[in-house]
Image (cartoon, rainbow, N blue to C red; front, side, top):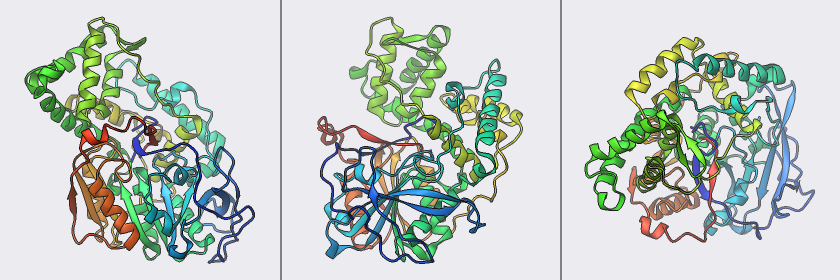
Length: 505
């Protein structure tokens, strides 16, 4: 699924603009569409994408249960197969979210994807409904309303409740009843409309993070139209969505325990303690110090709650977390430290779309008291992040979902790829999806750290298996465990561009 902060993931690295594979020229049309769909007319994309990437729109019903009603347009992009003689079909992408634009994603991945994949597929990006160029939702939110990770405090819970109520009211007023149609089920139906408009009998699909849930829902609604499907960094459909957010709390505690042991073994390097208990105490002393008086990192003051929020994702990568706590220790001692990187922030569309989907996919508890009690309980159980994960959200005030959540239970063949220590979609998520999709296979990167595996320099073994599946269609005979690419080999990537963030899930 999805952090509630703008970068839920580290996806494959983006590259600077450059030549791209050949694609249709302006005004070119797709193959004959099926199911009565109109032809797709490809034109220049603009927005910094080169001429070789073509864009178009596909008209879909706002409410797929009323096909003759109001329509919206879904923006799609295409990079043509590099070797037309080997072309197999289309490969759709979703980079995560909900709230992430996918229109430029195939172009961003073009250097990382193997030639054998680019030879065989037209690479198809799209902005899901409510996002980017596809009937975007933007609710006119204030900075406080867009802040969706909040600790529980008795003194501020009333204000937090009011901000979330205001968020929902603004979206309802701005977008009316159509807001309830911004759901994963409808986006999956839009994907099938894209398939039909492109004249394809089946689709191939690569989805990261939230995109795994979208792919799983598509597989449940349209099982006969799935060809090859890769689901990377998975969401368990049974948890969508509040239970999935809450999963971050116990999994963060597991990661913290692992980190404390790892760091204690390297006490000569980090100086944070010679035993796991001592390392843990060092961190919590810094948090307590920051609760009394903010710790200034660079020029940025951090109170204890902010440290807990920032740290949750850090602890899933042991070396990164150790460096982070050393930095905090220096700052707490009053010594100068480097400035924190500028945090990414949701824009209005991203934040609005995030909650439109997560609130629209399933009904959440309506009574604020439920959130208050859960946040108090989970802060005691999981002190690092429990209150953040269970605190109140705009979904408490959203209109009822138009459809029940999708129950995924099928035998569609898919390849699930997962790092063992993924901070955004933890391992129990992937195991849950593997159980739901009984025809699938899972490739687990043992001790793999990070969010996003395929072509993300995480595991040569996992990349090889995934590419082989996309090229041949053959799933492994059984679930596999792969080794990660050693950190010392990944460290020589200073000249590579920074990872492209996967939005939220």
